[in-house]
Amino acid sequence: MRTKTKSFKALAALLAWSVTHANAAVISFVDEDIPIPADYSGVAVNLETGTTSTTIAGLSGGDLNFVFAGQGFSNDADETADTPSWQPVREGTGNTDVLKNLGVGVAVGPSSTYSTGYGGSADNFVNFTPGEKGYVGFSVVLADGNDTVAYGWVEVTFQNNDIPGVIHSWAFENTGEPLAVAAIPEPTQNVLLALALAAMAMRRRRS
Image (cartoon, rainbow, N blue to C red; front, side, top):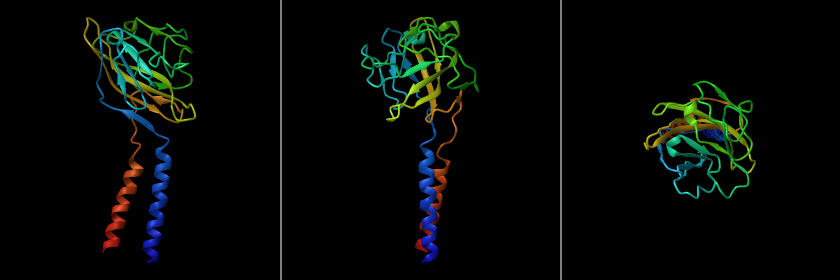
């Protein structure tokens, strides 16, 4: 009985460790393939939940807002907010400076170039090629009760000629640490290990 008790105590400790460390993780939305309509409304996205809206009013709690198939963008996805939650990495710090197209492995973090207020750009094709995938880096203020500023990236295909663009995938590091473009670590390995140990413990208990 002591052996079983020790096993379950060890398992409980591992599960608690896994849950604690899972809170510090890369949050990713992979292969979402959200269309960007070729109109002024475009699509607004809440990066924490994956919720989207294509209405002119935007999205409560929304972050990014790509318009005209991605040719333009706005960081006013939530028209009721006092300040923008999402700031993309730009060529400069002005509120109309264009987006950078970042390479795979480039770190997005506090030292990246952002603007500070509301604003967008209608000339994303300076750095992006219509029909080809690219990466936009960003900072986002999380709705976690602490206003944590997280950093991440979004994979996009912008279009022209009334062809819808696409938001393919995105990810961010929820503790405020920098994140490399296209990086999607496996945050659930510890949890999977704990579940495997739990299954082993249950089999031993039955036997």
